Length: 287
Image (tube, rainbow, N blue to C red; front, side, top):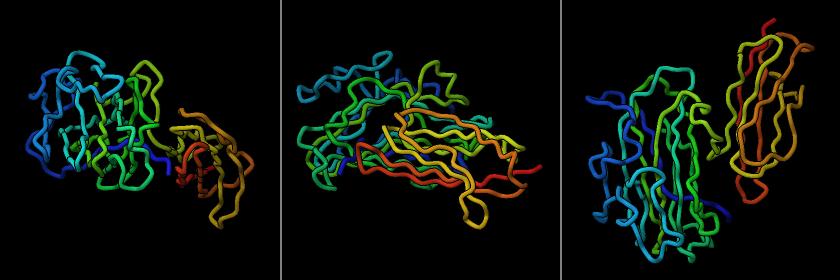
């Protein structure tokens, strides 16, 4: 079973907190005092320099993307550790958590079974939106930008956290640097790789007669996006084909259809693993 990555990213809404702060220190350059709450079952530090984290087993070695510090979540022998920070999100239409990561896993961590390596889960507002294991053949050796869409909780105070659960004696690590909050993916000035499948709500909605459909795929995948009416009858094909990892935007012109409620459905299947995805959005056509 081909699954990859490995820690836990926890995005939990805090209904009432005494303090909050924006991630202005997402580069970890203040070391152990970087503003992140840290916890390790084995008592290990999770923020450090390249020298601090150096091991002859980690090949190639990892150096921070910027500055001298980075975070490293993971371990071996069933180690559990985490970092978290409370954040007040901007009150903008779109909000993204953006970060850079690399990962490393033991060459014995081959995903031959379920409990191999370690696991990554993503939670947003108490909902699991990402759940995967790390395998050594999916190792990311260069700093890679990924994002999570937090637009559902824009303007709210949330806790952002990363938690690693090593699932066996085979070691696995996730390295993190340059964490930030942004109201636009274009603000980062370069291509931002989606970490999971996403079907965004169409815009505008309600619309007449044209609307924009945006979606993302994290790896080479077969994608099918169609529109159904309220009776479940397919009335339009938006796209059907294979897409490489990236973010995409398509238009749907409903000029020949009557006013009403429609349903946009995206299904996707990875060409390289067992990953699959399905999402439905409600559209309102008003003429």
